[in-house]
Image (cartoon, rainbow, N blue to C red; front, top):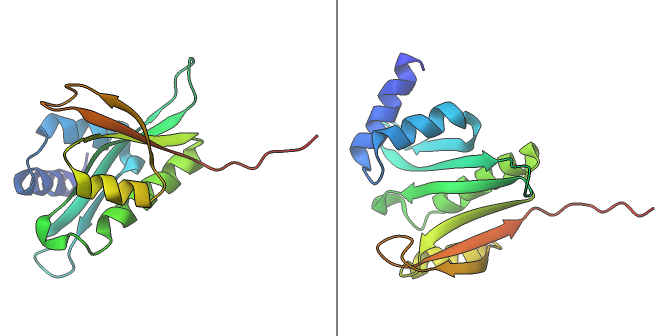
Length: 149
């Protein structure tokens, strides 16, 4: 990992500490194309938000993208940044061959639920005690053209 990337990663960690530094390093090294950091223009380059995800390819199920973390700093919310980051992740997952993209979210976060459902994500299941509270699994399928024979 380059020095510049390490510094940027440290800045992300220092500004929004919802996850461990190990979490960020793992996602940047294992899934570099599925992570995106948004910085404000200007010399200070303030962190606006980020998305970290995974691409899962298992023999027993369809390949899929998983949003591990999406965070937008409070002062940059309601500007379309979360939608842009999610669209980026969905497109990259599609290009990798994912059948769908999923995520888990706290059931109490109604603003996030409204955002995701407005983007076409649908409630798949509720999981009790996933966090200290229950979580929804939301999923959005990648449209594929069917060949008629």
